[in-house]
Length: 176
Image 1: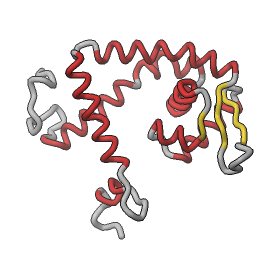
Image 2 (image 1 turned 60 degrees about the vertical axis):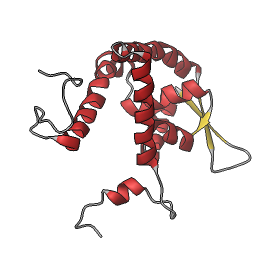
Image 3 (image 1 turned 120 degrees about the vertical axis):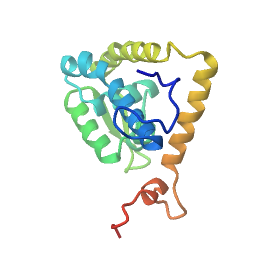
């Protein structure tokens, strides 16, 4: 089996795809593989979903943030953030407080229980990152960082009406 460094974009993969669709498939596979340690070691033990984990880590890293900011940081849609916040709040892991100067804003912070869970899970995230990037040197990491952020910027771009350029560009032909 060829490694990623030995393959060229456009070569057939195990899926029978080639070119950019094959690379996209590989990125999706990478994302799924990255979730394995979470599913195996954390999810059942701490009764936490992937989105709840993402939110807990984002809130823990910032100390206090608003729901819409968590959605921006994580790439999780606002409705999923709302559901995860509600579950974390019921579990006593997140505190939700209305902003007195802006009634639409809700401030999120970790409770003592949430902070404890964050402290348990943060080293696991570091282990995953250390393992994943152990074969890359500093220059490769810097290149990957630039590429990842370029791709995120492309996916988050908005047109003059505020619509997602990505969703508009990928709309099925038969959809009005």
